Length: 164
Image 1: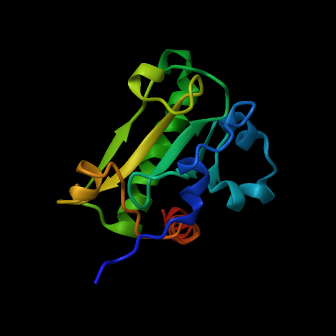
Image 2: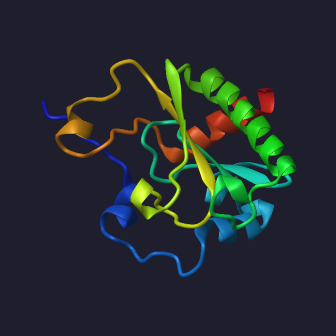
């Protein structure tokens, strides 16, 4: 029997939906905190916020995003860097608590040629990884299988962040 993959939140992305007119991260940073669940924002710090990637590589894929519209690491001050590292550590603990991955990829794509989907606004990706999580879907079909609804991921990670 053929299985089915169901990920309706990706339909706008897959169909080439209209891109936002401004900077998506600046809009989310400026949004009222009561919109955090809709925007998948898990935590707000003074200089950074943590959010779930709306188009995740794996379940639990989060981003630590600068509140300030800066392009590169060298644009950050010492206080911003310190808070970034603290949030990364909290996210690492929360992801491990919530999902128990075998490892975590941490990375930033600086510029379009480096693979940045949102150009000019610095952010770091944290992607949980498991032994054998690359399979024929991602290799042959250029499709990733995300096994959990984003709102379930949000609730699970929010709980884990509150415990860390």
